Length: 555
Image (cartoon, rainbow, N blue to C red):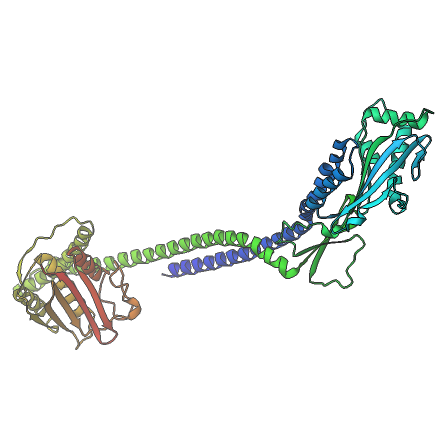
């Protein structure tokens, strides 16, 4: 028993260590997962701003790469009407373009007012128009060469820059080769803060003519049409596309030099400069710690659930291991008690038989009284061994369903009276009474019914104190069932043992349980009643007694 106690303590200690390690590992895993998720969210906060920039800047890129080059489709022949139509589509499609200046330009070797001259080349505006939302009708024409009361002075600077770029390019370019992309962007585009100016790209033949006009003295040349459009941009009209609303609480376009006066320590801030004509501005991202915590919780939840599931499985496996250890320990205890009790049950009759046999063997002469006495002893002890073997054999047969119920008509009055008479002869101090109500005969197997009565009557006698060895048997009908009640005045059964008493080889450990039992009686009764398609239950109070109730089908 000491070995078993040590084993139980050892198992409990191992389980405690296992639970401690699992709990510590769970907490460590949750902390690691939370820190990992936190770093990931803040890294995403820094990284995904590029995605926001691309989405926000997409309309500008479309405007710059696709819409502006459409001017070259007109080959320099835009007039005020076609320019107005083109500008109207730009203003409607791209809200960040708030003003467009159209320079209706001519190139020649003429000396005309307000022209930009490089050697013999003259680049001059024939007319200058502006287009935009809510412009008065009389403000569309800024300058016309044919009108003496107009002047291009307020808008000529941008025009001169483009004319100068073209002149420098013509002076150094090899017009026998195609224009490379570097020259396209360097010569025919002028990108300044919040402004893009574009000159129609001439054809190769025209470039050769322009270079000839610049470098050679030639006769009075024709006038060549050219278009220059300058787009004034408003960065505040650029629509910010927040395609990561769970990361960025607020995104604004600010000047590149913008710095917040009072920075809240609860705010997480990052920024990204714009490019092109908006290079003087930046995207300014802000989110509060509490706002990011929501995203952190949302992303951490799947990790936490997965970890909890994994550790739940581990705990369940640990529980199964612990349960198996308990079951094995109980099985060991049952086996130990069974072997111990069975050995005791066999040893006692065998010892008595051995003693009686030795006395008979050693006696030189035995009287008739002594022969009767020793014969009775040998017969009783042999009956005990036979009963024990029969009980074990019957239990096994019932469990394996290897016997059949042999019903016969049993007279209950005669059957019970015979049982009472037998036990009163066997135990003179045992008072057994009975009462039969509204039933006379019962179709059942008399051998099985006898086994039930014997086990319950034996228990009532063994577990009753001297002076209280009394048992009352009550038999009656209830609907389609016959009810058998065995009520004693024994030591009673503790409440916490009520579920265990019908288990095989189980014995209640108390000072009264020294009656030489192997723990099969009540287990045998339960299996027997079940085999007879009935039910058995018990009510008991410690020190007062127990009442066993058996319900069997009557029909």
